[in-house]
Image 1 (spheres, rainbow, N blue to C red):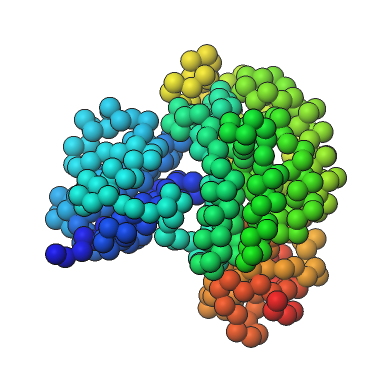
Image 2 (tube, rainbow, N blue to C red):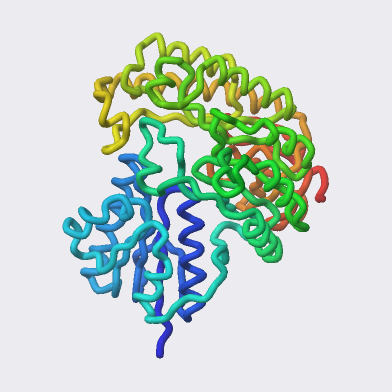
Amino acid sequence: MARKKVNIISLGCSKNLIDAERLMRMLSAVGCDVSFEQTRSCDWDCVVINTCGFIGDAKEESVNEILEWAEAKKEGRVGELCVMGCLSERYREELPAEISEVDRWYGKTDWPALVSDLTRLHPATALYDRIITTPRHHAYLKIAEGCNRFCAFCAIPLITGRFTSRPVEEIVDEVKMLAGRGVREVNVIAQELTSYGLDIYGRLELPRLIDAIAAVEGIEWIRLHYAYPADFPEELLDAMARNKKVCRYLDIALQHVSDSVLQNMRRHITGAETRALLAKIRERVPDIHIRTTLMVGFPGEEDADFEELLEFVREQRFERMGAFAYCEEEDTYAARHFQDEIPADVKQSRLDRLMALQEEISMEIQSKKVGQVLTVIVDREENDYYVGRSEFDSPEVDPEILIEKSEKLRSGDFCEVEITEALPFELIGRLVRTL
């Protein structure tokens, strides 16, 4: 019997990517030829789309992707079309009636059922085993699912459910597996990291987990994503300071600084508490690079609130910052209790001003790195440069370092690079030595 050719399309965040990688491993284990390609020029026995349903733009992208593959199916280039992930988890009842070309709909974690339906076989793989689709030297590591924070604007708890930690031992086994396959950098992720352990151990255990991951031979860099500012476990800062493997980097979404906006957002923290936390982080982990996400245009945000946010960004000088305009999500607290009354052009104007300010700050921070020697991991080779990242740069979202070619480097190599030129979102440097 010919092996079934299955193509996986994964949209949205790195957490979704891990789900797709696990599905790929299960399909491979039962004899499928599995691909991870965006092209619609090939013929497939089955295409599985792993959707995102976080915000309006992401939902629109997912629906458009489904429709385009549905067209490929009509043309005879796709045998079966399956949809899984956050969008189909959230709209299990509505979507099948609207897009009839899809053969099977699944939720966010229905991977075994999907594999069984496609192949009539049952996958027998470790829960954490997966096919790595990132460059082999780095991988994402999901330590929990769900969220208990219930921020007013956020639909994630409606999709993923309550916060559920994975046991330390299981996570460490996964890290050992990753290290055995050549992974040297793990990017630790969850909907929000800082609740880790509370549900299964009765206490916040992220510091213990980080110590355990750092003890795995072969892992050189550990980077932390998606911390939550309220109830922040300060012991984590000690773990970051004492473990040289932990990158001086923290992704912590702050959303705003105005007390009235934070209260309406149900963020359980004040502006003063936010400033105090940031000061403590920078004091306890010197030279740390903080990445944050901010929101403009939340209902009730006055001009004065936005000006306070601008001043906050000027004051804090975040090394990495993203922002987005509020978009109402049905069934959230904000959708039920507030009117989305700020005009779209006002939201966009505020967003543009905020990001223009951040670009100036980013350029100033980047320029100060000229003359410094940074440890860099090489991601890939391009025509005139090798492309890598420092410990301050997460894959996909942060600036890259272009290394002038002088001797042969390979993907996954660590080296020292002297920075010779700065651009707002890139650095250029020369190789000093390999490590």
